[in-house]
Image (cartoon, rainbow, N blue to C red; front, top):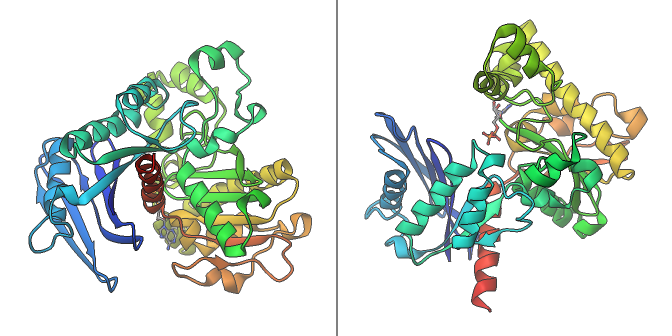
Amino acid sequence: MKILVINTGSSSIKYKLFEMDSQRLLASGMAERIGESQSVLTYKVISEKNKEHVSEINATIHDHKHGLLRIVDLLADKTSGVIADKTDISAIGHRVVHGGEQFKHPILIDDTVIHAIRNHIPLAPLHNPSNLAGIEIARSIFPDSAQVAVFDTAFHQTIPTKAFLYAIPYNLYENKSIRRYGFHGTSHANVVDKFSAYVGMQSSELNLITIHLGNGSSMAAIKNGQCVDTTMGMTPLEGLVMGTRSGDVDPSIPFFLSRHLKMNWNDVETLLNKESGLKGICGTNDMREILQRRDAGDTLADIAVEVYCYRVKKYIGAYYAVLGRLDGIIFTAGIGENSPQIRELSCSGLGASMGISIDSKKNETHGNDIREIQSETSKIKIMVIPTDEELAIAQETKKIVDAFKSK
Ligand code: ADP
């Protein structure tokens, strides 16, 4: 069974095609700058021997439908394609950012589900409209394939009221659904499953802190396999310092910007989402470049790294307190998987007080494997676990399709 996973953004479509019987990635890529005169289409074919062949095509992609049609053409290309035609694709898994309180699990998409995702647009105005467009276009191009929505928020729906409720008038929760939802749920769930398989225990026996550090970053506290708190909030803006998002700030700062700098609300929103975080402090959101600059003695790069890791460390302490007993800490995503310095700084000084200590040598090892990096004296397992959100979406999609077929 072949499953296509798509993640539709406002001007892009990321895609991955999997052969589910072997869990193998067949092809992946992205249509970028959709609607602009110089769009870019990338197409990567992965051979059975894991050899990659990447092509980049400059084109004009008028809109998302045109983009997805071009992707299908590439996948079905006579010489470099991986499918005979579009009917080879049995199902499509869609990443949907916000499912609110309604969606606690992935779901087969029908008109009712589309209506509900549309109803959640006020909670995710930057993401749900494009996710929805992707679904509608895919339904028109693949009328006979099952379409499944996998929500970023779903895994966090077990968070109790005391952790999800903001201390603002209660009617804003009741009538306007203002509360913490959390995001990156597919990734947090994926690394919890991998940790549990690695240690050979049920996830229901495990208390974990999962740390997803990518361009967007978030942490989650997992008690007996279920999420009980997470750093992102009603939107992905809250919590950790991110590439361009501020994470936690005093809620009065927007008023100050409005009153004293005469900024309008759209500009404030852009400032906090696109001009803040690492980029706001030192001018770039690329952690690799920041670490190089820091090594070369750049003061602002050093401050950015210090602020970034301090926030992670603060939440490790908070979540340890929430969980009471801790079995493991997991680092994942671009920065979490690849940066020994960030892992080291985020856990520094936690040995004596919390029994959390990293072995510098193990921490330096690179690779795509799951690995333990705690020291011999550490009471807590510290692990690097690569996340694969798209494969996880494909697996969830397959489960839904199989369950539907067996009905
Ligand atoms: P996204 O949220 O866009 O999926 P990723 O999970 O790919 O992001 O993470 C992107 C971040 O990972 C970037 O800041 C990048 O610089 C950082 N990164 C990737 N490789 C390394 C590395 N070897 N060392 C430090 N940071 C890295």
